[in-house]
Image (cartoon, rainbow, N blue to C red; front, side, top):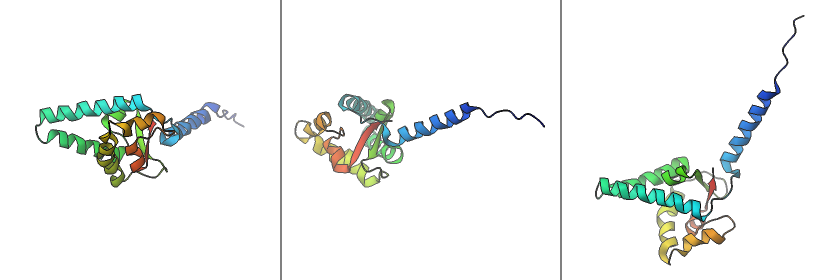
Length: 143
């Protein structure tokens, strides 16, 4: 009878690590705080301003629409991708276009109305949600 090679335990560890990485990528990450979110916002702002300068009148609007598209389809804007952040629904459901538009346009406008206090709420909130996140029922996590 032939000696069969023993199965390596390394394969099971690799599978275990891969499944753990998938779990952490899908929602068990830490909530993203104020400063890292500000950095992501600044990257998005530079991208939007650059688009507006390169293509007057329509560039900035196109960049905003592109950011909304990215958030809706992938869960991040360009700035959030740079800082490895992800926008998710607070109940774990899939983002829908109404939530994204509510968060990015109406919610951010309202958050900035009174000296940006809606954004500063991120600092004191348990889930690090700004007013725009609360309006759209979203959270931002480290991916």
